[in-house]
Amino acid sequence: MSGLATVSAIVVSYRTGPRLHECLYALKSDPDISEIILVDNGNPPDAEAWIDGFLARTDKVRLIRSGTNPGFGTAVNQGAASALGEILLVINPDAVIRRGSVGPLLAAREGQSEPVLVGGKIFDTGGHEERGCRRNTLTLWRALGLGKWTLEDQQAPTGPISVGAVSGAFFLMGRKAFRKLGGFDENYFLHVEDIDLCRRVIDSGGSVIYQPLAGALHYGSTSKVPSSLVQAHKAKSLARYFRQFAKGPSERALVVLVTPLISLVLKLRG
Image (cartoon, one colour):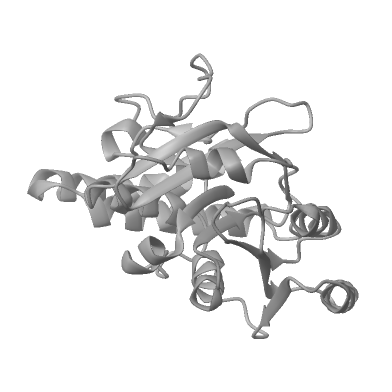
């Protein structure tokens, strides 16, 4: 690994489809990744058969399969609990890491006090940066349009920059720091757990960094899950996040008032 820290890649799969193959093969062939931990949250029999075959052919992959789907954050925590690497690399099962990305992610950590969370550039099949790779800290006011949240329409940085949040689809964090913070909040089943983790990193005196020199191709929308169910989870998670980080009685009262609107807005957007 050419002197780099040992890196454990964690992939959570739930009815992901064949894009999982590309994700795992890219991780397998990357010399900077020392182990792959695949958490199978539920896949059809043919997909599980392929996973078992991949496992048999690959020395550096380990499988966690409980037969249940406890949610994304809980599954990542399960992977992190058994990880042997000094560094955790979390990547979506429908994302393909660009070779040579681990080095820049690690370089962005240098000189920073723990905890440090570094996210890379996530791009679509056209090479365009996806929404949500670099963001300000999410507040209720920004969610209501009283301030800017996502930053992808701003000039692309040429090197690492501090941000309020990055995407949970592709990020790197020290194993000890991740565990010390308690990992992902398992009360989020799907969505927003990454924003919550970034918020806690910053609130604890750490840094969230966006590193454009590291990248992953993200296909997106590959899981065979109804969009209405995904939106319902997102609405529930946003409501929890705003309650969790509300400041003062007035903001807590406002959260109570706007929470019923969150689900409606997401349905209209969908």
